[in-house]
Length: 109
Image (cartoon, rainbow, N blue to C red; front, side, top):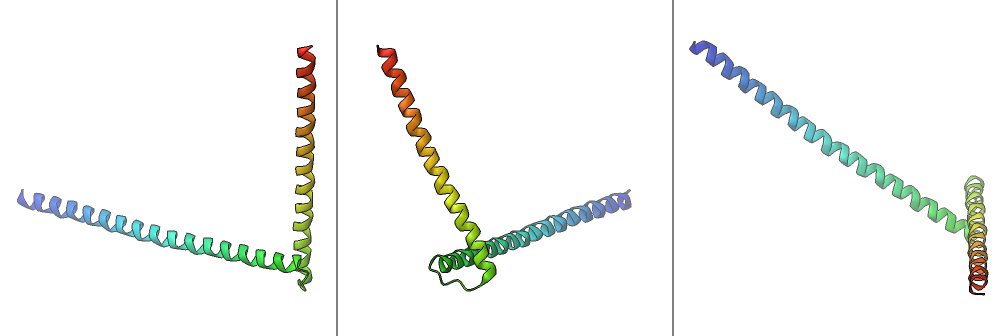
């Protein structure tokens, strides 16, 4: 009977040890994955800074690289489109205000 209990104790101890090792492994892997994620974010940030630098060169007409210049021209076209759309939003707001004012004046009469 004592042999049986001894085996059960060793088996339980082994299971606890394996579970502890697995938990330690998962914690270590999670930490490493977090560091990988941080490094990837740093790369994204650096690429963004490079892009901003190149676009600043383009705006100051100092961009010599043809491929980068094409990308910058696409960005400029998008900025122009945004400006046009913002003007359309302003015009729509003014038109709505004018229509609201007319409706108020008609309702008062």
